[in-house]
Image (cartoon, rainbow, N blue to C red; front, side, top):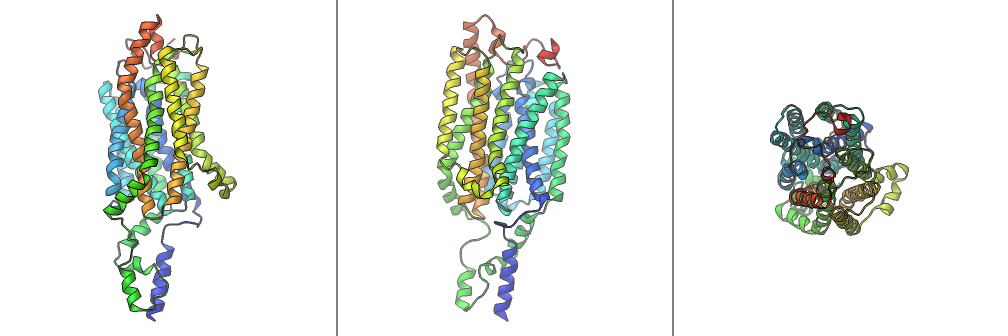
Length: 446
């Protein structure tokens, strides 16, 4: 009788473990797609709006990206050590409040420095949201990792396309365009309420004293085996030593991610922002919109390719997964070096080359993001997987923050150099003239 009871308890506990091979409900898959989409829609919209946020000032463009990722890095850097103790529902509510407070204050305040503080609020929301969403995937079938990545890619391209279309083609002010996105964040709460919350079941089960150990075996033959099992490995919560060991293992991959993101965002936020072309059919301000739109289009394709392949044939995923991530890092660094020389010596004949480079850089960085998630998912089991996936956000945030800080020096230097070698100083900056403050974009103003 005692053996049968242990068997039943083991089966029940086993059924509640994080899913590996079972299929997920459609609403759950849609929820993870929505989480990625909403997070990166707001994030990429702020990147697209960077020059308009700083309109009327000479503050370097990278100040916006520094405010976007500064609080984000702080959150993602410290959260893996205690986040397991915080339920997901409070996290979702905090994300919603911070997003709405940041976006509405960004729209209605007029001082540039106050706008940057609003961006910091959004950054806190982004950090908590991405860290929680990525960690949550560890409780479900691995397919949701690709779905979440695809959602981030769609959000990456949809928001800047929307922003560019509204402000450049339809002459809607940047403020009105931004406030419409604030209402999108409500869907975060809706999808969380509708999804199947397996993470709650797992947390509830691990909080009960003796259930986890019983899940290891379906039959207990001897008392000494039972005692051994009670003190065996695989606790539901990781020890500090296990976390430090995992960090040591993932350090090479994390370093590749940091360097790649640093290279890419230094290009888009500190180098090509000083390179506009007099022979382009649009004004300097619109150059930045097209650079960013194509960059994010490339990132969308890169982040989504694994999810698209899994829809065709899931068995192909191991064959198209890039495990040598350092190769992608080399490509990103090469793009940075080329753009540094191009912006300094200004030898490109027209904007076509920079548009192609922007797309290629985004494509590579998107492929890298999707593959980092995939490699970590394949390499680690729960609960270690939840911990290491959380560090993906740490690595990307650190790379962007370094780029933002470097951009505070690089962009003014390149802009100053540009003005010494050309008489068309307005093409040394992809922003509306600081002396012409207006709610209407450059092309619409004309």
